[in-house]
Amino acid sequence: YSDYVLARHTAMFFINKSCFESLLATGKIFNRDHTSVIHAIRNVRNMIECGHTKYIELVQSISDTIKQNIKQAV
Image 1 (cartoon, rainbow, N blue to C red):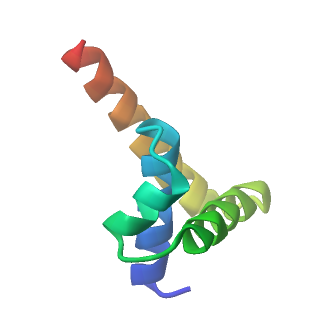
Image 2 (spheres, rainbow, N blue to C red; image 1 turned 60 degrees about the vertical axis):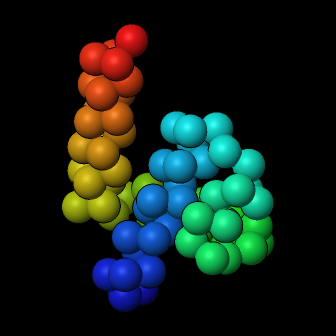
């Protein structure tokens, strides 16, 4: 995947996971439909399950940052 596609997929994954947005609402943010969001989430999960170390580290870093920001906001 290109860097842009991977970035979009990662953003869709976290918006869906962290913000509890529906697939439709997440897709609208990126001018995509819900099936594109499903595809993005599957791709992110597949990359993690396949053991792409650099990508796993990136996802973990983003996840940690989101958790810290949520704790500070509450």
